[in-house]
Image (cartoon, rainbow, N blue to C red):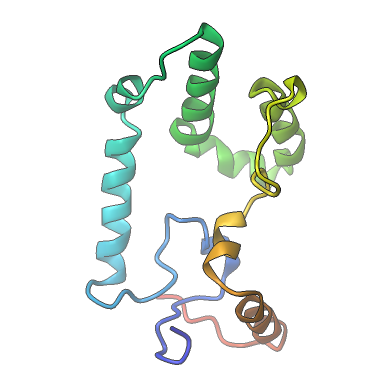
Length: 142
C-alpha cells in the first residue's frame, strides 16, 4: 500500500479501527468508514448482543455482558479514559472480572492496546513507519 500511495495517514491516533487510514481499492475511504459504523452498530445492537448471549452459568453471562457493554457500548468513555491515563488500572480490573485470577487463560498480548494493528503489518513495515515518522514524514490525512 505504501508503494501505491494508499496510506492516508501516519497519525497513530487514527489507527483505531474506526478511521480509514488507507485508501481502499474499490471504494472511498468515506464509504469504508460509513460501512464500519453501520456494521458496528448492527453487530453491537442490544438485540444482537442479547441474541448472542452464551448459554451456561450466570457467571458466563455476566462476563459476556461486561465485555459487550464495557468495550462495545461505551465507546464515548474510552476517549476520556485514554486522556486521563486510566487504561492500565482499568484493564487490571477488567481482567480480574473476566477471570484472569481464576486460572482462565488468554493469548499473550491479547490485553495490549494496538495488538490488532501489529498483526496487520510485518515488523519491518512497522519499523519503517516509525522511522519515517521520526524523520518528519508528512502526514497524509484526508
